[in-house]
Image (tube, rainbow, N blue to C red; front, side):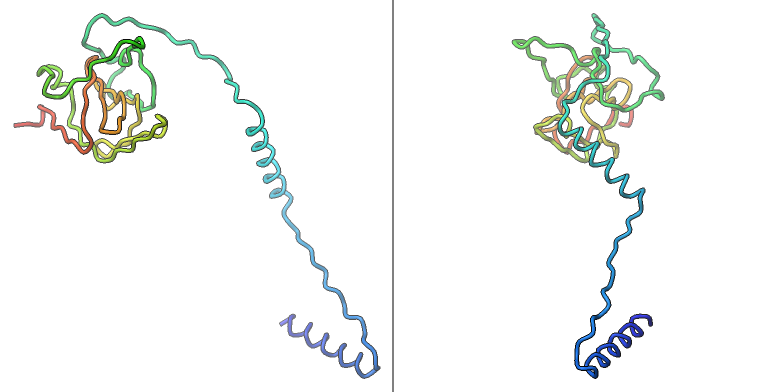
Length: 191
């Protein structure tokens, strides 16, 4: 409604100016942008933090000391109860042995494992497999749950590595290869 009134006033001013024989100056509209102060502050802080992150080197906040453990037995005993397991990527010295550059770790197939080791593997259904050359972007979905390298599938099984052909799990100190799309039914569920 106010636009109509302004248009009528403008038209009347133009008519009066033509009747007088000259052009009357038209009123100049003021254009102003009022941004909230808090928005300007937030955007400014974001830009400052971004610039700091870009131009300053990343320095660790604190160095973490790690404890080295030696395991002589081939069977691993879980350090925590199964209900206390938190699935976070980690390097566990019990499941990720340090390998010399000239030494290779044997990766077993399921058919090569003894019955005692096979009984430790739970039912697994590998539903999704994402492989990347960068390890931090690798992930799999097993039994409708997402996993990254180093995460516990259960108390006895660790997802050791995600390869381009499947996954490698660590069961009782032995690395076991499973192909993409494989389903493993635990002997506990076989009748």
